[in-house]
Length: 353
Image (cartoon, rainbow, N blue to C red; front, top):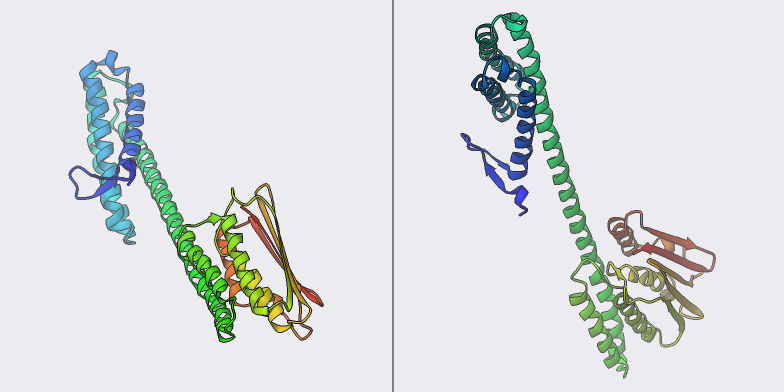
């Protein structure tokens, strides 16, 4: 916990506030005290230093009492419970009490200690203290509301971030088992045929499982590992189609220094196989072109389209999850374009890493 956020017990109260709250209020009262010292410094010459100190002390102490009665008791007990009449009645009574004590002190100080002065009139003393009291109460209330609003915004921001992280983890949990399900189906098909390629599939599957279980525990992974995972997936799919399709992956980028959120590229490959190559194996093809310019990743996926397919470019759960994850992880820093042409599907993903 940050030092400024540590709880601080209030004197003469069971309540606690943060150290930051105590520091801000202390600075406020130091500024108010400094203002009164500057305003009343003439008392040093008109009366004496003890009366000057007494004047400033009485005023500050009374203001502190009425201010924290309002903040710590009247606000939570009345105003926040929508007992508006009780709140304003309590404030008025406390202001009257303050006015009575402060004005009597001023009347004594200016009327008898210093001598007859223009502002020794009790009415003028009441008027001055009434408006100055409302002014400082208003400042304290504004300070508290501002601090409360700031803390509320921090809390909302923290909750929002936690919610987004939880949603991202949920979406990833939805995606990963779907990938694994497809790969295990491919392996099952090869084992039924007793293919000699099965050990190679197991090896690639092992590499993919290592990536899924260990490399993707953080928020981001090396782009190089994400592309390597993509290559393994494509190789497994290539084995399943037994040379009936043409698959081309071109990578023109230096990948080892950049990071990316995991499992953002595979949904587009999966979509290409699910809605394209799997439904038309003869003369079908898939081309993937990945480039990286500075920190902008561009991945283009283009594949053949069966003549009977309609609206397949929209995809299903995989692409819906991809859109949500992109919005959560790269807000205003990505562009996903899906194009459904007569004979081909084209998906283009641009991410500012």
